[in-house]
Structures are given as C-alpha cells and as structure tokens.
Image 1 (cartoon, rainbow, N blue to C red):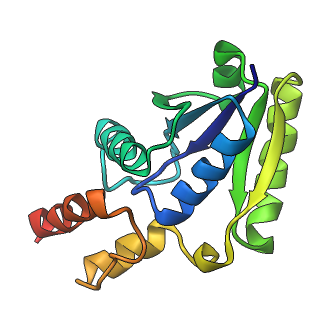
Image 2 (image 1 turned 60 degrees about the horizontal axis):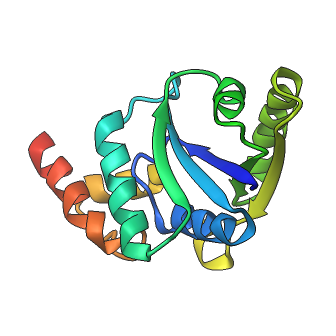
Image 3 (image 1 turned 120 degrees about the horizontal axis):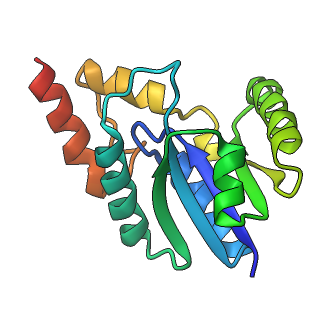
Amino acid sequence: MKTAICPGSFDPVTLGHIDIIRRASQLFDRVIVVVMTNSAKSPLFTQVERLELLNRAIREEGLSGVVVDCYDGLLADYAKQCNADVIVKGLRAVTDFEYEFQMALTNSKLNPSAETVFLTTSAEHMYLSSSLVKQVAHYGGDISAFVPACILPDIIAKYRKDD
C-alpha cells in the first residue's frame, strides 16, 4: 500500500489544493493531507479550523482514501511516523519550483525513504493561492470561484468578525 502526504498550511483550502489532493488520491492508495505550521506565516484560521475546513471539503468531493491530520514539526519526521512513501507537492509556476525543489532536497536528506513528487496545477488554478483568496475576501470580493462551496461561508464570516 502506497501512502502519500500532501502537506500545506491550507489557510484556507482552495480549489487548487483540492485539485492536487484529488489527483494524488487517484495515484496512491492512501493520501494524508497534513496541515502544517509555517512559522513564517500568520494564519487567518487556527490549525483546528483548517483541519475542519479540509475535512468538509474532502467529504464534499467524495474523495476516498484521503484523511486529514495536523503536525507541528518537520515534514520529514512526519513522513517517517506515517511510513509515507511519497510527499506530493503542487506546483503552480516556475517560481514555486525553486522553493519546492529546495524543500524536496532537504526532506530527502532528512528522510531518504520518502520521495517527493511534483504535480503541476491544472491550468484553471495556476494563479490561485490562499493568499490571493484572503486578499480578495478581505476587500469583500467574490471568492466563490476559488474555494469549495462548503467553506465559503466560513471565510466570509471570518472577515466579518474582523471588521
């Protein structure tokens, strides 16, 4: 049984994330979507909220063999704990590649048994990022084409609370 990990901050989960998770679930027996803490970012949603939003989005998509977890540590260590064979990373553009390649080499050094696989984002999601979603939502723009419908109210409510 091949286990893959799809790591990210998912703050919030976008349709681009869901696209990568769906495609990974077609390639691997088990996919663990892991909400990671990025110390360089100040998240809009708590880790528990991101976990819940992801669970809802994955249920809505009907993805089987996909579970959601969270971890506050090194991805390479998490991969060892889960006996993961593969780390799946989505790439939107060439600019993503340099950073993700550096991370893949680091993870390989820390955990040689986990291979990193890059999936290119579908063309309709190449421009999409959680940061873009948050910026548009902050100014009251329509983000319905960017995020799963089941989490849209949560994002809108989060910005209403901040006002």
